[in-house]
Length: 277
Image 1 (cartoon, rainbow, N blue to C red):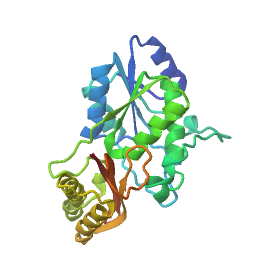
Image 2: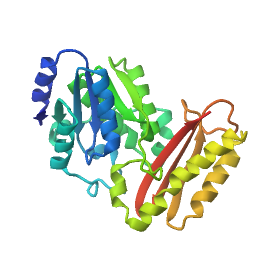
Image 3: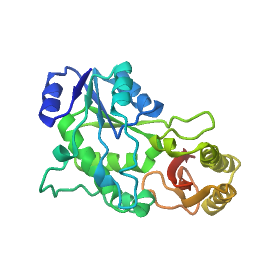
Image 4: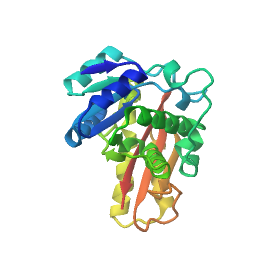
């Protein structure tokens, strides 16, 4: 496995690859969810590249950029065991050199949910992903369904900018109690970790209601909200029942819906979602 830190080296390594290349962009502090993306890439491609870069431009002033967990040595070891071909670890100076002032804005779907709660977040996500795609030149890129809005933004950007790649969605990987795997789970103390399971329980409640014939989005939002509010350590930022493509809030579920939520457990902000029909 090659560990590459500069853009010219990464481009040289890409030119030397034969066959299709898969790419998994990450911010590091890897877990099994990330490795499931790697496994998908290895299944579909001749070579797999993983980037590790904690992107400062997708963090707002009140976000946890400095606190975000980092363990480069551990991450590299995990990726080597997983059979990754190249790990790309660029620096902020290389990705955002002096005078950098070009941005990618995906309008519409970024103005809701996470985009509303974290202004500028998706501008940073779209910009860094576009830059990484242009450096790595992958045939396929892999993103987890846990970040459903991010996945939708990347798909929209790829389509609108005619990027020559396929965006592959990989199902959310969960802990035994249903909590979606996330690097931010490491922030939770034992009591908070137990409380965090309420996110998945609330999504399962929404699924049960739809299966039993409930079509009112307001009724589902109210039930999910009530279950989460019964947990003393949980503070809701949003509960959404939205169209799976436009992410506009629904009044009635007629075909498919994305049930998504953002909840603070103590000081830790967690998101999760499920798509239902």
